[in-house]
Amino acid sequence: MRQLLTSIVLCMLATSACAADVLRFGIEADYPPFEYKLPGGELVGFDIDIGNAICARLQIKCVWIENSFDGLIPALMAKKFDVINSGMWDTPQREKAIEFTSVIYATPMRLVARANSHILPNVDSLKGKRVGVQQGGTQQLYAEQKWAPYGVVVVTYPSQSAVFADLAGGRIDASLQSQQSAEDGFLKTPQGTEFAFVGPGLLDEKISGRGVAFGIRRQDQALKTSLNAAIAALKQDGTLSKLAKKYFEYPVIAP
Image (tube, rainbow, N blue to C red; front, side):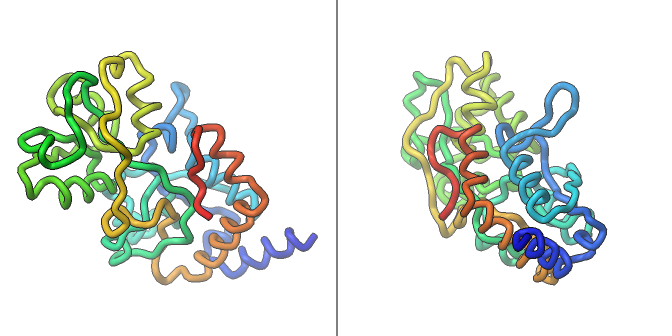
């Protein structure tokens, strides 16, 4: 009963989204295993599971609104949806435009190249090479700040699947993305059989941020309070860790 009352109070404090018993999540459904579509059009993935768990906790309905990743922040500001839930990292650059909830999870970035390429994720190895990244993602920020000034050609794509297509076709030399996205979306598929992770995981908190969180508009402070309370509760009762085990063989949920 206490849990139910808490959820109701939190929802009443939030924006009109909760008042209408609906929470609209903005996503780009082209980034397995985080969010993607089954052949029948059903949205699935880790972020989808997290969103559904949040809505269940708050006793409201999830609505999913698709948008290109690089347009998620402008669409949020235009009130096309209420919350960004699309594997978006809380970075200093993004915090200039929007706010974030507490961090939910964090997965390492990894460089992928042909297994026999001898490429490594450093400027000496990558100078003159073409590295593909998804447009607007944390990996673009990392590559453009860490590598591009030293002669690495950073090529941006509208979707992660487009990055993998050009990597398989030899139009770029390597790609930078989350470890799990590379495993599920490329390395475990027929087109990725000749490719592998090269070098260690990459992280720079000043560039890539603290981890993945929900993005919200600054004025929606009550909604932020509601979401943070729900995130904390789902961490405490083990729900988020249980969901993560469906997709990852290593811990990803932030404390």
